[in-house]
Image (cartoon, rainbow, N blue to C red; front, side, top):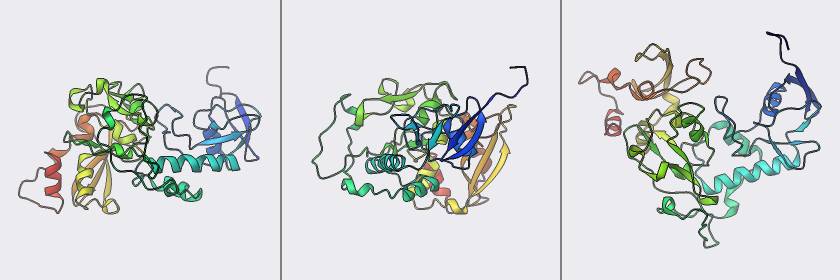
Length: 322
């Protein structure tokens, strides 16, 4: 192929409609090109697909198993079904299993709509079992036998051990996004990975040491990609606990980080004239949604106003800062 030439196209059908996409595209790309977006949990445009959640599976003619659309490359003449009986049944079961074992109360509205579309009913597996405090201590590969009357869960106490963010693994669905963001896709710190096996698999630091003793550099990129709120800004956690987190009242202002000359874009989330968290646009050419510790958490100097102003959330934010 000559330099500058467009890559060869691939033509396939999505739910009976023909669609042409560049070679190397995924089925998810083709679905979106055809106007048929698919549900995703572990997929994000700025991360490598890991096929963990399986809610994006589709049916491909001639294939024995359902295929993850987020990572399966398209092929010439491929026929894809996104809303067949097999697909709907599989997606419903995946959502129900996740919601029966983890707290899905903070997922985005799109996920809520998909779960409603598939008629998910996690409660049919029974009431959720209570928190398990020794979850991090369990022997790898060993599954605790429940009482048969409650759905086993991943619930445990929230881990609050620093001023920047908290870990509420009762919400963790093992989507692997935080692992990818901490690894080659963004930070290259490799501070966290999946430990354990089976139902007892969980996100852990190297050698299961405390977060402050690990390789973590507190960039917060793991928070930015978490789809369930398992990783959360300490400020948001404290405000939610005080019933003062009001996202519908927050404004978002885009600016440029002042700490260095790289040019990272920041989105400042402001409530009651106070910055409550900082994110970065995923489509920004410099950051791709990722930031360093200064860009994401180094904003307190902006609002050190002394006695000039007091807002309803000041005391809560003060507690979050330790």
